[in-house]
Length: 81
Image (cartoon, rainbow, N blue to C red; front, top):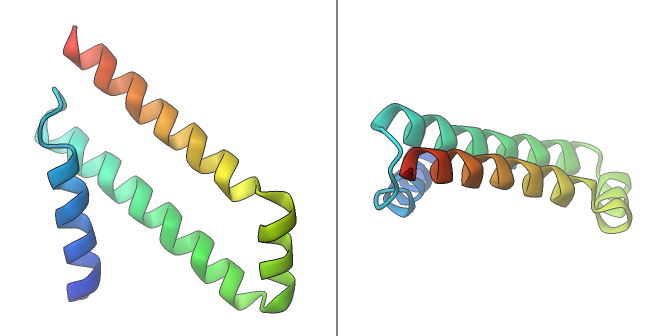
């Protein structure tokens, strides 16, 4: 993991610091989101113009991101009870 990814991870963990999640859950949530973002960007880049066109038309990756964020939000809510 390079310095840029570590900085991103550090910022994600900082964003989760005020939640009721334990450290492992925070780490899992942060790495889930960073891994998804990196994979989606790599795939879009690898597909070239076709990947950018699909991303612009389909917005599928945003729907998946919404699902991931909804799941993390639900976990935070459960832990806060």
